[in-house]
Length: 611
Image 1 (cartoon, helix red, strand yellow):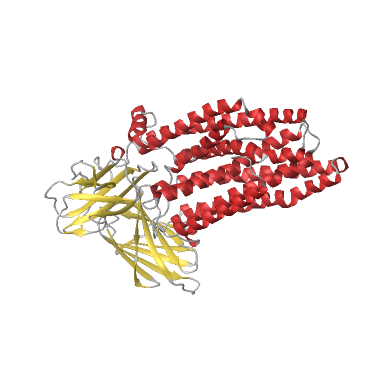
Image 2: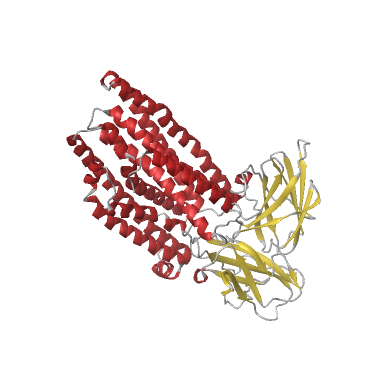
């Protein structure tokens, strides 16, 4: 299994490339991708006016929700609950509902929801409003019955991201410690041609490094796994010390099922490691890694990232879920082999060089073999990453349409210095060591040491950039992917203070080359008309593709909602009739203007809505 020479690796590259091409073609036909349980639609629809009060409010989310840890409320203009407190699944787990008390009077009603995804375990919250008969004033803020997301606490997002970051690093180290000694080290030893005594000394040092790496990585992943259950229990129960919430998450949720699977893999890793360590030194000396215990340990290392993919963005897809989970899994495994291999290269190389004076020979053999492994791994990382990009962002320019896209673009950009450093080792350092072998080590010992230092610095640089990439990946797992037509972005923005006028709430902000004016009428809780006026200060008007308005209630954490404005007199005047401003208090309205050939222009407005 592990004995593979250069020609075999190149054939494997071709085979994997063929599979990747088929995978891209297959994946490109798929539909939109989402992450976290995001609002899709509802009955009644948001901002709608219905003649009679509905029997039930239904909401469709992008993912199934854990009913036990989710809630929904319907409130009237006085903040009194008018639902029957019977939150339930209607149809499937992504379509919950709640029934309403009979004979509701005319007016505007606010639906507030707070749900926990049954797929990736993330919590989301939001509100929407609908009117019966005609629009009226909805619930006032501060009402004692408006309790969605107002009690308890939630774990900070940075803590979950750091925990995932450390977990990713541990899995990568585990993969590298299993794969590098079997696929890379033998090439270096063949090139070195050590005598039996030297080989035994090398085997002793390398075996110690591999054992420590495997045990440390498994311990690291075990700690992050325990912390993940605690964080999930905290998120579900809004209490960091609730043992009952942790137990319920473990026993009653999909997250708990996958968590149990991960623990089983970790236990298997410790047991298989204990069996394999006894033979590790002999395996290094013989160079034949077709040992059942080591192969089983390798399977365990490859299986561990699957437990991440099963609760990832990929697992939340509504179509081709299995394919997308496999793509995500391959992305994690190949990336882990590459990064973990770098760690082993940095640790094992100086250990081997410390017991031999044939430094150039060892480096001339190990660098090209690691480069071959890296080519396969990087090729799969890029291919699977491209498939995921297409599924979630649907194009290159979409990287600048959302926070998720922006971070994904950063991850791609960080690959450039990583690839440059790898190319330096393969195309510059390796030929130098080959020339030293031909000329003789003694004649060029000073230069060998000089180039060896450069090689070590290059590997250290690769590792540093790789750790940053793992950190960005951890942040991506905590960030919601954009809905189709999402207007989230990270371009320049401006903030304005509220300027009330007799006609409503009028404000003006300069964002990039656009003067953006916003008018909200009548500026009261309930139905409002929003006018958006655009003026290009450069006099170079571009076609406007879309104008989005995102709403965030500042007096209480109820999530965010979004509307698309209609063109009234394009490209300068856009309007929107909405009931999104359904609660009196402070609102943040973010206007995003998407124009042809330009980055999104963004402006933030703070609006004080009266009752």
